[in-house]
Amino acid sequence: MFSVSRKILRQHPARYFHSSLSRKSNCPSCTKVLPSSLPACTNCWHISSLPHNTKHYEIFGLPDEPNPFVIHLPTLKERFRSAQVLCHPDSWASKGANKLVVAQTLSARINEAYQCLLKPLSRAEYILNCHHLPVSEADQIDDIQFISGIMDARETIEDATEKSQVENLVKKNTSEIRETIQELENLFGRAQWEDAKSAAIRLRYLEGIERAAKRWLDDA
Image (cartoon, rainbow, N blue to C red):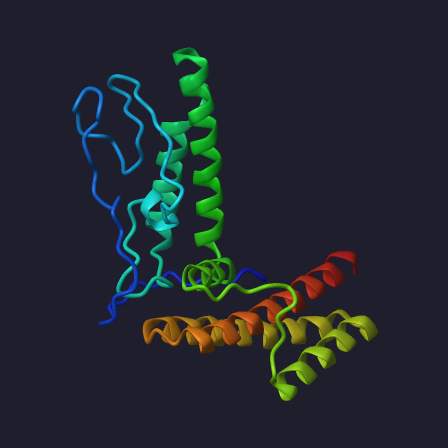
């Protein structure tokens, strides 16, 4: 009810990142074509770590251009499941202690990348961080009207006595989340990084209202 995500795949003219692992390569040990963009071979059981600068998109062989914010979620989920099966530590436990450690590290990194790309806010924050504009908890927004609306929403939740009051707030807040996600897509598509950061901060506030409303309804 409260989860908002967009499964959209559109084309934009701008180019942002280069994905070096988007294509499958050959195993450096047995030369067979690897089953995915990950350095793990089930033919000869060779496995190696990813470079530290490997982007989340590269882990799943996903395009990060022309717009890095646009993710085809069904493909992401499918490749996440395949990657987890390929690098699951249980599959490498009998291949030696060193390979098991590498598999554990890869599995953790796969999960981290998936969780980051799955949700619009964490995805936006990741893109901004790649462009040296990290979003922190200390970041605020210079929009008095927006902040006033957030304060009013929190007061509505705190003072609510009827379930309908919070449900109506949720509908309005969900609409604002959708609009902000669309705004982020457009801003990233135009490479307007500073404006995208402001929109990401607003989305963080809106998701805070979403969580607070959900807690109230769960306890009602």
